[in-house]
Length: 83
Image (cartoon, rainbow, N blue to C red; front, side):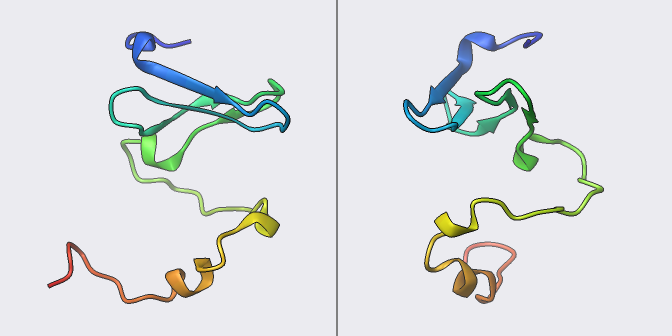
């Protein structure tokens, strides 16, 4: 339940899989939501204001990861747009 702004939240539920998502209708940012089965509250780390104190405990759906993920994780890092 949202305190304010619920009208700006959009939801997507995949018709044949147990996948659902909530996002801001204006900017597309991921938002917290109760999953399709109703058994878990999903809180995207990017939706938090404070530093996250916990490290990830698991990587899920690894069979569906993008082919470029491993190379992307080891790519050069920049604090802003590269020159």
